[in-house]
Length: 79
Image 1: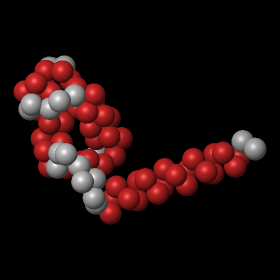
Image 2: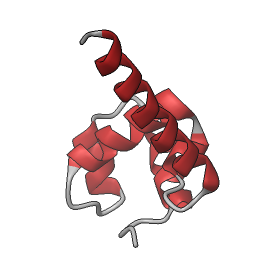
Image 3: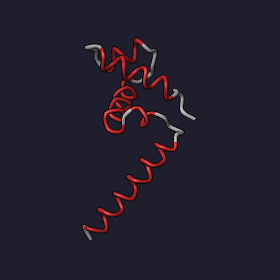
């Protein structure tokens, strides 16, 4: 299970996007141990929207499955 809930991650990302602050500042504000986590959440949000932050959702399983299929397809094309 994830250390942080999807709802919490979304709150953190929204705070980052709404304020002119660094990943480190956001991590300190929310008492998150790593600014890299904040950066990763923002990247996931930008790529997949809010559903990309929900670890246990069917949406995230779909994203992972689709991504893996795309990787296999690209590798097959380049052989």
